[in-house]
Image 1: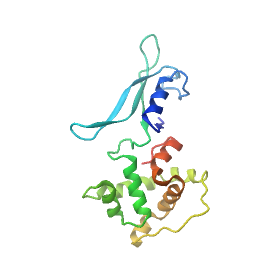
Image 2: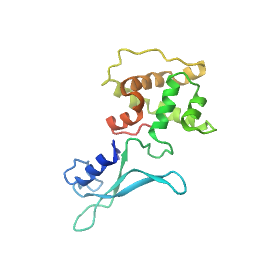
Image 3: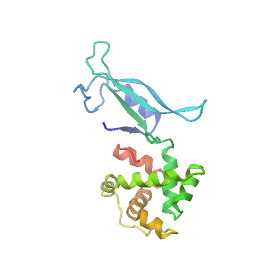
Image 4: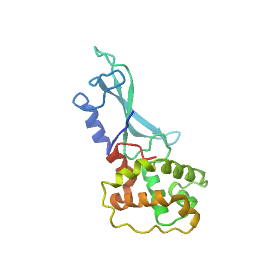
Length: 190
């Protein structure tokens, strides 16, 4: 199931208000005009605070509709589905790596966490998704590329092809590269 990303709550609300006219792929049951808004989805930030990260829609099987009851998530582009951190934190991590910061320091700067064990998980996930990132470069002007600066040869060996790709993303989308990737491709970044 493809995810749909939106730039703001307003654009998400506007989309869900016009679900009848929207061109969504058909549901599992083959119905394409039974989608209805099913409420907001939240990410719990603390015991007392939560923030909106998207909306859920349902293939309705009520009020005379013959849908199957399946649900679908719609996300804000600032959200990384199934990840605790927001897209801007991942962008800070990537920008720090591009600027030559060691992997563990870049993760600690971005997340303000003492442990850096997830940094290598993030890098591994981005490497696995490199085949999805590379086709996006074809639509960008990547003629003026520069060499990546890094302080350690281990970092360079771990990340060379990935960092080249991410550097092109940063030169094209500045400091919102994760959000812009998700909006442009309508696919999860990590």
